[in-house]
Amino acid sequence: MLGVLQLPTFGGRVTGARLARARANPQYRDGKFVNVVPQSGYSFADIKLMFTEQFFGTEQRVPLTPIPVLPVSAESLAASPPANGLRAFWVGHSTAYIEIDGIRLLTDPMFSEHASPFDIGIRRLHPVPIPLEQLPKIDAVVISHDHYDHLDMRTVTYLAEHGTHFYVGLGVGAHLERWGVPAPQIHEMEWWQEETIGSLRIVSTPARHYSGRRGLDANATLWSSWSIIGPTHRIYFSGDTGYSDHFQEIGRRFGPFDISFIKIGAYGPVQAWLDIHMTAEDAVRAARDLGTTRMFPLHWATFNLQYHDWNEPIKRAIAEAERAGVSLVTPRVGEIVGNEFRSTLWWQK
Image (tube, rainbow, N blue to C red; front, side, top):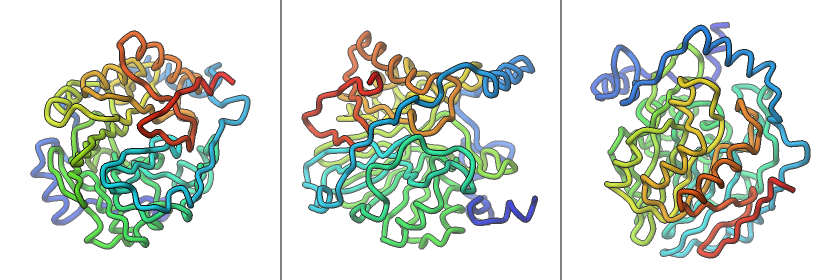
């Protein structure tokens, strides 16, 4: 078993200068990173309920018909993005392709078939709209944390070979280093630190979550959200997170945002899980805190990781967005969202 955990897919270990830097971080206590707002503890009743729901729940967690995917052609992405433009499409789960003010970037790029260290386990519910190999050169990637559905070794190594720069939380660089990503392409950041690429400022901002890839390294690396500030546009990516007042602080410092990519799914039945995976209603509340013009929902309909119907999050998000006056876009996988976009209720068909 210990030999298996040494395989590259499990990533690297936080040691040496990287560990010293972690120990100096205000969010690092007693050998691990912690949330500003602590997560509730799990009672025996909570664990029993989660076990029961996971294995005996009656929810429709997988769609009965194929999820619609609009193929994206390599030709449609070939031209250099305009210096003052903004457009995006959903690849699936937490992965979005974004062109902002002349820079191409991906959020939590996950193009593999399984959200697992091996080619088994949790499988995609739909194909990607464009093969990884047909993408144009991606300038930058932002990684929210190191779980398998957000940090995929195969995708990372391919992008690294083509010159992509990676912006990651403190400690996550150990995984990339293990996978052979050149050091100049790794930008390991703490909350509120920022770097630039082209005309963009990429800022690591807080989140409320957890991390780990091998079970024995819980919370050894820092989780983050990301605020990306260009000369013309501003976008926000939540990553995985529970709700807290960090959204208000981010909105105060960097808002308003033209579009915010916010998780809406994979919330659970007990408070400890909700503390680190917010509900659809809290996602809309976060959008209001951020002062975002449009909300782009992520983290649903791609992997069966939830305790609810596969399309429950989008139904709840739409209802709450209408009540709260938040502009919510609901693109199909691969459907490009630009300045003009008409949403459809595609999951009802």
